[in-house]
Length: 333
Image 1: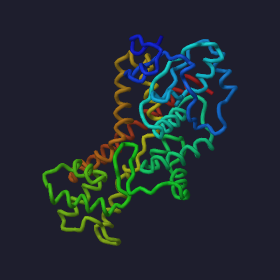
Image 2: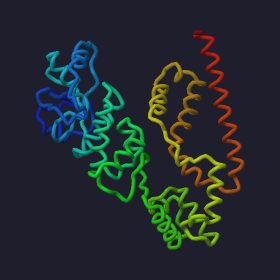
Image 3: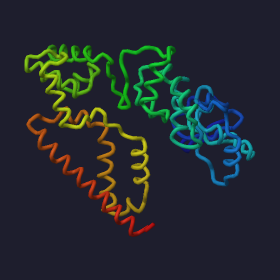
Image 4: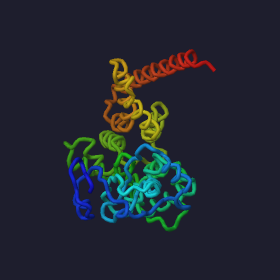
């Protein structure tokens, strides 16, 4: 018998296919090997290591329609060696391409690490099945660098061409910046009452780009800067003053570290600890919206906000140095 969310299910596959989200106890014989991103197959030593553990292993991830393993083949084999008849399963709903992407992401995040060759082959396959995914998004999913993914895209003839990219934030950005800027200008003229964020979303550009186009139109300039124009030089000068927030990347380890701290009872059980966690959460998760925030800052406030941002940065630096001094006292080398 299987159970999902506290309810009892029969052992029929159709019942699981029609069930909602949750963890189900599924007969091992009904779970099939899946499309693994590991080029060399399963690691038998790792399987034996898992089989020797007495504590229960996390649920495996299985495609609901095919009953094939997406993540957890080593755990499935270990359960079989131990003579178990059922295994805890979490179901995935999606097509085969998305299932492979999920398998790669799961193996990068935990368990036995993928080799460099595994990750490179996986990135190339994802480029073919998801050509619109940005290099940074694929890099995050595979554990490669964004430059390595970009090189794979450039050198492979089998990767389909795409006129836009979907970033890690889910936003669509055209590769041809001029087309995006022209579309923004058209939308501003057609619906001047529309918000900057609405215009940016419809045109598939960043809010910062939409803001620049609006300011150019207000000055009577063309929406697309020409090479060597004074306005372009002004834009370059402003970028030297302000950090390029479009390049801010929320590192996967930052999110993982935050989640680990959020689970720590010693921090959660004190008022100051909870306050510290809230501060970290705002900083780590807020970084994803930094481009939108920059675009929303009124021009007459920019200098003041730059000063305050740098002051806050120094506060965090002093905080980190104080913790380092405490660490050397508590754990002297």
